[in-house]
Image (cartoon, rainbow, N blue to C red; front, side, top):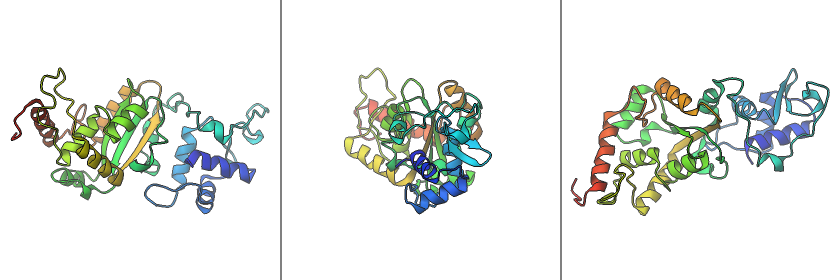
Length: 283
């Protein structure tokens, strides 16, 4: 069960508004939702999820309540409360409409990051932003491990889904290696994998190298075991938000728009491109 459905179930059962702390405790007590890292559900994660689903939840003087219930109505009316079945197919409204900084705050809130191996059914077919953290920087090989340790940050990538949706760009390409994912290519190179020699020979695009099916499976397994991910749906201004976030947080594996872009990563990607474009295996 997703967290917003778990929150809805708790509020429906309670029959009254509840604080985020009460909701988190009740969700955990009833076993309705568990985090990918096994940690206890914090009130801040409930708050972030409520903020991202204003069509479902309203903050009242008494706490969080279901949008459309009498206690939450602003005009005295009480429209029908969305059902859990309907919510599975109803994306959250754009959080940037009223507060331009809301998407960035929600995206990078550590409490909302999920295990990368658990999100296949949840990433929406919508546009937006995504962020990727490594659970433990010691899982990275040097010099990337040392750099991440020196920066005291486990944030390794921020991306945008504009021409393609989050489901296609972020999930399919970047996490599952099923297309041309910039992050996936970078991570594979960092982990020591190399594209098949000559696989780009004669191709118009000499940058979109890919790994062998076996290596791709290994990279995906590493992603599922070591990465935490977050995303937010946004309808406009996505690219400008992405650029601002990259410049402010300098994620380890972002090259474009990153004032702290790593030369080691640029050289690794260039090596992979040369190898994929050549039939010489000794590069």
